[in-house]
Amino acid sequence: MVKLRWASSLVVLGSQLAVAFGASGPIADGESPAYMRVTLRGIKAVDVQVAPIRPEIENLGLRTDQIQTDVELELRRNRIPIAQDSTGATGHLYLVMNCQELSGPKGILACSVLLELIQDVRLVRDPSITSLAPTWNDGGIVTGNADRLTDLRQTIRDFVDEFSNTYLEQNGKGNHVNAIHH
Image 1 (cartoon, rainbow, N blue to C red):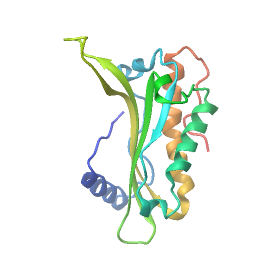
Image 2: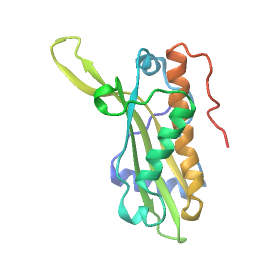
Image 3: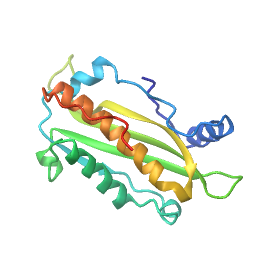
Image 4: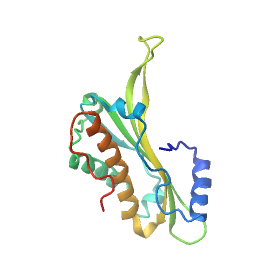
């Protein structure tokens, strides 16, 4: 799977290109590589944090607390344990969205979405050194109308389903969820 990492200026440029070429959903799709999937093995619970959404985007109706609830509900629906706080978590699931209202037709949004699992890691060369590092991620660039925010929220739930499928696969839970359910 193509994993996207971006800076703010690249997001706007990439999003405008996606609109120009008619993309209307995630650009990246597929299964995460084996080296990322295996890092979910043994995770007992995750805590969820959603980065704050800019006020001008929240004014359009896409609120941080709403996305936080969507992510947590999807994880619970998929039977993924959620820690009450970061101290009880063995993995930290972060969702970062950067949305821009594009110039041109009113109400067209382009959003970069990154769902990332962060874990404590130790360096092989010196196991006394520990740090936090992303070990699994999914995301893409999504475009759509501001009056159809339910589509964007569904895309975020689809990314959470990808995480859930990988978690269940790696932790011996045979019931994978349907990654695209509308």
